[in-house]
Length: 200
Image 1 (tube, one colour):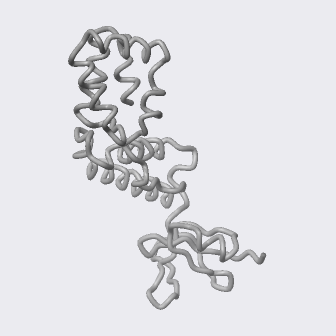
Image 2: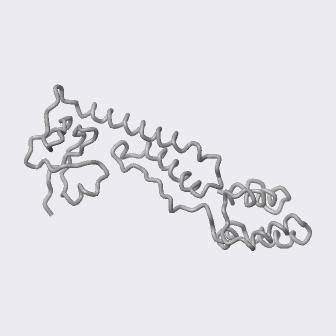
Image 3: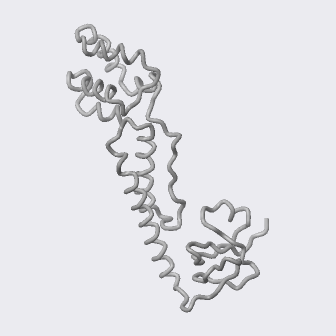
């Protein structure tokens, strides 16, 4: 597979020159163009007619890197601020998708490949809900046995278990789920701190 000089372009500025195949270049998120037969350097200006112009003053590699770092930090900041509203809405259908995404944004800032790594993407296929089996597997065998035994002595617990059995999926952000698991910790069926672990 033939390798070419590929210009990576952002904001109409060549920010990087890589040696790669056209097929690989097409997999990158950034806009790229083959410059194998063109005299182009980092810092050159990309024109709309697919030509390049040298800037009045070529940026040094360090300046290009610092510019890239600033751009990526600003992007992460804007993405976090745009999703801040989601933090308290635990019953939102995409709550956990955003939890994962926001953590990925923070991890991106300290990744070894930053600022030239792949930007995190929000994955809305991540669900808040678990199957009953998945949810009950978060409890230990002893906790499950204790829960069933205590239900005969506690109308509140018995009612919660009845609702649980009628539910198709368990939404970890649902107030009933949170309330029920918290109740289990309050009455001592599960240990201190276990509610947070089970709902995480």
